[in-house]
Amino acid sequence: MNHLFKGELNATTLLAQNTDTEGECSNSQTTLFMVAARQRHPFLHSSHAVLVSLILPLFTLLPVQLVGLVAYLSQMHTTAPGPVQAISTMASPASDVPSRLLDLPPEVRNLIYKFAFQQPKPMRLRCPSQRRLRPSRPSKDDARGLLDTCHQIRSEAITFYYSLNALVFRSEADALAFMSDPDIHPLIRPSLTHIAVDFGDSNDADAILKDHINLVDRCVGSLPRLRALETRFYARTLDACSSSHFRTLAMAFDSLDSDINTPPSPRSPRSSPRSSPRHSRQSSVSSASSSPATSPLSTCSSICWEPEPEPIPAPDMSALRAEVLEQYCFTPSAAIAFANSKLKFSVAASSDHYPGVKHDKLICYNLRIGMDGVANALGPAKEAVKQRINRVGMLPRPLNDMYDDAIDGGFHQRVRSTIASCARIDVGVS
Image 1 (cartoon, rainbow, N blue to C red):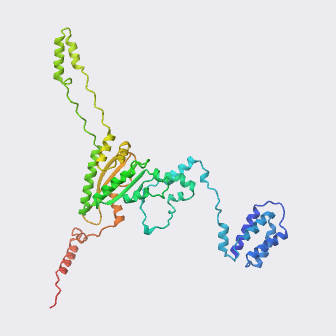
Image 2 (cartoon, rainbow, N blue to C red; image 1 turned 135 degrees about the vertical axis):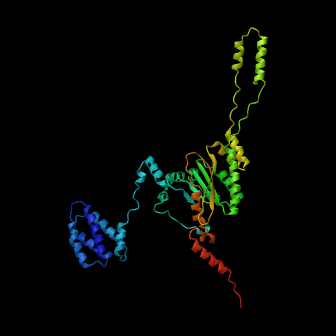
Image 3 (cartoon, helix red, strand yellow; image 1 turned 90 degrees about the vertical axis):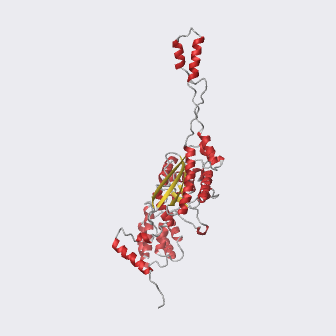
């Protein structure tokens, strides 16, 4: 009750401070305030009422403002609320406060959007399962919450959010489902500039090849602002099945890389009778014999200053690239779009030690179709090891690695002999 009275007294004091000094609060106004307060708060103590009646005449309240104060008291709950509810009602901010961000010029707002949305790490997206669909909100430090403030900010900033960040998917199906979603905002798809798909373990070479072809067909040419398209797959060396599929994929993409990036060998010009030295010497001699008036100087000059053959024009690389991609089962539209763009095809292989198993490594393969100057969203084998451990976990170590003789030969030798002796115990009926 004391808290409630303090809140009402503070409200009255604030109203009194904002009024003019003209006029006095009459006894009828004081009685009106006390009646309203006692009707809404029957538990108001008599001593509080006396104190209010003594303090209220000291304030200079206009009649209109006093009516506003009585209206404020009439808006409270009819039941006797607790002090916490009254204070929280008074402290609630107004919802119609205009945004200061929208008062700034559009150029300044664009700079703010770029600074807020440029993330140091790529965004990793996954197609949600139908069994786990639930509403979610961005975290407090996530810049995506700015897109949910109002429609105007969302329409202005959504292009910056998806053009400044790289989207990383776990599979080709997730990436295509995201881009072909009918409920997606119409400005998202034209804003995509960097897409990466982490295929993970290469367990099926045929499926991964088809997914690569389908991904390139759907992205290259259909995304106008695309600057980079990355894929990655890897395999553990001790996994024989995954390693064999990895080698098949590596051979296929190495062949594609060599066919696209290796320029064709220049064709040597065919030797014609006019350009052969022997024929030129014979022609000069015959011309000298036929015309006796010509001097030896003119004969030498005709031999030395013979015009060189015209260079053969360089072939059109875009047409050759399109032809190569069509040979590798890419659609003609995607092949022509890639050939006419400034995108470059490149591959990179790497390996790193995989923890948990002795003498095991993770061999990784990164493919990239993109422009120069765009940072990779998928790292080499060292980063792939961390991603794989987070995805599937670390495999348990074998028993031979747990008992290594190189660390403490005596102790581990006794342990291994004990295990061997226990394995030779015969259990039977005497």
